[in-house]
Amino acid sequence: MTLRERVSGPTPVVEAAERAAKLPLHHRAWFQRTLVWGGLLVASQIFAMQVGPYFWPSIPDIISGAVASFSDGTYLLVLSSFGQMLSGFLLAVVVGVPVGLLMGQFRIVDFVVGPFINALFVTSLVALLPFIILIFGTDFTFRVAVVFLFAVFYLIITPAAGVRAIDRELNEMATSFGISSSRRLLSITLPGTLPYIITGLRLGIGQAVQGMIVAELWVTLGTGRRLMNLGYSRELGQFFATAAAVVLVGATLTGLLLFAQKRLTPWADDVESAVSGAR
Image 1 (spheres, rainbow, N blue to C red):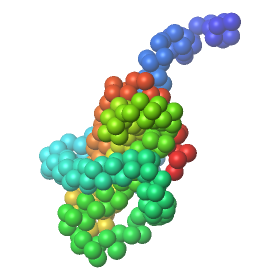
Image 2: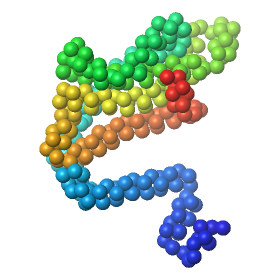
Image 3: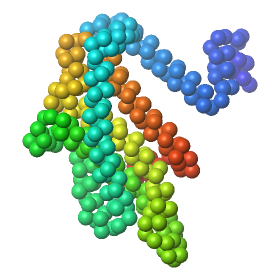
Image 4: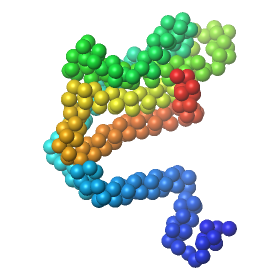
C-alpha cells in the first residue's frame, strides 16, 4: 500500500513525500538536508521575531551583517586568522604523523611516548593556556603553539592506529622475501596507513579551528577579538555572519580532505570508528 492510499485523496505533502522516496539515495540525502536546514532557518526566524533582535538576530539581520562584514574587512580578518592557523596545523602534521608512525611501528617508542600522549590527550588544553602564555607570550607564536597542541594528538593517534591495523602477515611475508625496511615502508606501511592519516587530518583541522578561536579570544586578537567586540556591542547579525564564515571555511577544509580521502583511498572504509577505539 502506497502512502497515497493510506491518506484519503492526494495532498501536496503526500505527493512530495512520494517523489522524495523515488529519488536516488544521493539526491535523497540532499533533499533531507535541505528540509532540515530549511526548518532550522524557519525556526530561527520565528524565535527571533518572538524574543527580539537584542537576544537573537533575524535572517535579514544576519544577511545585513554579512554585507557589513564584507564592507569593513571582517572577512579578510577571518582569512588572516586561518592563514596563521595553517602554520600551527602544518607544524602539527610535520611532528604528529612521523611520531604516530613510529609509535605504531616500534613498541619501545609507544612504551616511552604513549603514556605522555594519552595523558595530554585527555587533559583540558584550555587549562594550559596561562602556562603557554608564560612561555611564548601573546603574539603569533602563542597562537601557533595553541593550534599545534589542539591538533597534534589526533595526528599522532591516527597513524599509530593505522600501522597497528596492518595485517602482520604482510610484514612477515615481506621480510621472508628479503624486502628492505624502506621499501616495506613505501609499499605496505604508507598505503595501509594513508586512510588513517587523512582521517587524522580531518579531525585535526577541526581541532585546529577551535584552537585558533580559543587562542584569539584569550589574547583578544584577530577573529576572536572581533567576535568578542560584536558580542559586547550586541551586533548579533554581524556576529552570526562572522561566526558562519569561520564555520564555512572550516567545513570547506574538512570537505576537501574528505574528497581527497575518497579519491586517494577508494579501497578503504571509514576508519574513524577504529581510531576512536585506539584512543
